[in-house]
Image (cartoon, rainbow, N blue to C red; front, top):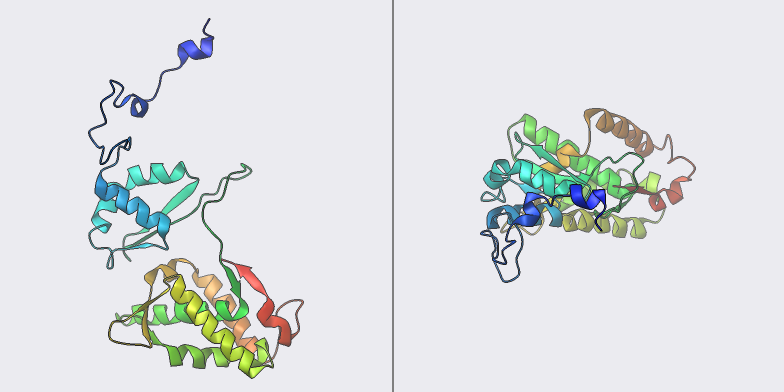
Length: 237
């Protein structure tokens, strides 16, 4: 005997596709029950693999994202993810949706940032702002990054050799996360990914800049830490 719930239940239209045993018209391979066209699926894969979909680097995918934005949002919402799109910058990425008190699994990985990582990212964010103001590409070299981080050596550590290793490790980390994109025919020059502009508000940039300037001048250390231990402090990002 069927319950009232069984009697009132009607399968969604998506589930009824191909109910006669035939594959849906959008099937791309054997056993494929997906409904999205090939190019839209590629947009989803790029967003999920991260860190972003860049309209300049992914020129074929960007118009597809704009065309099927709502469909992409629906698919991501099913994974508790939110789509962030900046049309002016032609950049899109995903982040964990704000689900309030609802406990949900986390799909996106969280990167641990040391103090040196944070300083480097803030420096790159400032360079990106400066380049935008002049209508230029945000390009930075390895020596420039190292020189900037050296200003914080006293605040981060008294071990100069160890500090140098941590600087290069931070540069490699941001390269790994595609915040820096290598310029062809150059070993030490990189373009800063525009995605970085969306990660810090103007207020956050100002407050962090003031804090790090005070640390570089030796006026303060990270809360609860002595200057020699500051490099061990990690933040989530």
